[in-house]
Image 1 (tube, rainbow, N blue to C red):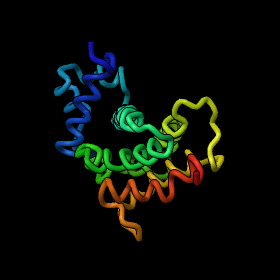
Image 2 (cartoon, rainbow, N blue to C red):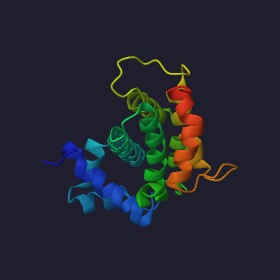
Image 3 (cartoon, one colour):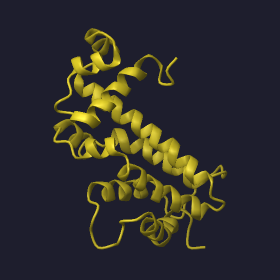
Image 4 (cartoon, rainbow, N blue to C red):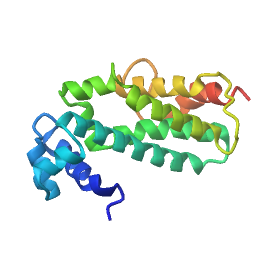
Length: 190
């Protein structure tokens, strides 16, 4: 059985096609053919093409959170967990060719999901950030009360607008930025 259940092969096929030909040029028929199922099955299990894009984005976000949590858990201090979680999130998205293709998509749905309607992606990211920064602690106490949301919004901004004043091109740049700015929000100055 597929790890994502019955919808897994459909989402795999869609993700592959989005990466190969882009979202606008991918049809439900293409996805069904790639998944070796009937088009009606895609509509029945997932819904419209917009629903398919949302489902792929949600699954890839969940996969990203798991990978980031694993990378952060390898660190021994809360500060290092927070910094590596931040840097790994940005680096993972920047180095994933399919996600990059989706970000570069001219699809109005993707643009909407990444901007004005991004709460469906940001809320789980905020929960993941809180979990990563909390570590083994049972308390949700952070140096700044809304720190996980602030951190996710910073990550979101960096992903949508990669270049500004601070150098954020390499993993080491991201790590240094995180230690200067993100760790104090989550862990405090100590």
